[in-house]
Structure formats: structure tokens, C-alpha cells
Amino acid sequence: MKRQYTDEHASAGVNAALPEIETWPNQYAGYEIEIALPEFTSVCPKTGLPDFGKIVLRYVPDRRCLELKSYKMYLLAYRNLGIFQENAVNRILRDVVKAAKPVSATVIGDFSARGGLTTLVTASWSKRGKR
View (cartoon, rainbow, N blue to C red):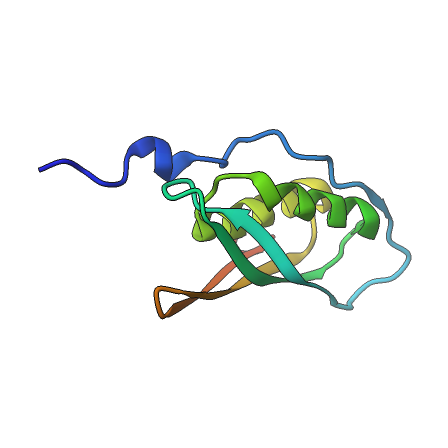
């Protein structure tokens, strides 16, 4: 039996070049930042069809905060990227942690229905748990 999904589909977009997320020096401690992009889009690497959803990032900054315009440009770069929804959420988390080195971070991808199913993907990281 022929596999419908290949290893190439599964890893598509995971290591693609994306714009850098810039940061700036944090002045305070002990607070949480929430950033939402209600119109996130990417492309299914198998079908080539668009995926639509909302991406929410919640993080507790340490020494650096995300610069919003660069984070927005980073997220917009997914528009033409073939990547599974689950991988997109985990990739965003990985790149945010790499850029800002926060105390903790959670990325939630709330994706629109496809074939009658909605998908909610949550990935979290913290300095204590290291995921």
C-alpha cells in the first residue's frame, strides 16, 4: 500500500529560512505579554491548500522583549510556506525562544475547520521545564 504522506511532507517547512525576530531590552520583571494574529495563514504541504487560523503567543520576558513589527513579518512569511499546522506552532515557539530567551512561552494555534474538523495546537516552553 502506498503511503499518502511522506517524510518530506512531515518535515516540510520545519527548517525553512524565515525573517529574523528582533528583540529589545526588557525594563521590568514578572509580567506576561500576549500577542495575537487572528489571520494567520500557511499552506498544507500535501495538498497545497491554504490553512487559516489564529496564532496566540503568551510569554514572560526575561532580558529581551519581541519587537512587534519583526514578529509580524516573521509570521506573515508563513503565508506561502508548506508546513503542517502542528509543525508551524512548534516552529514558532522554537524561534521565539531562540530570539528572546523568555522565562516561559506558549504558542496556541487555533485553526479553522478543514473537512469539518478544527484543530487547536498548544506548545509550551519554560526555563524550568525546558519543555
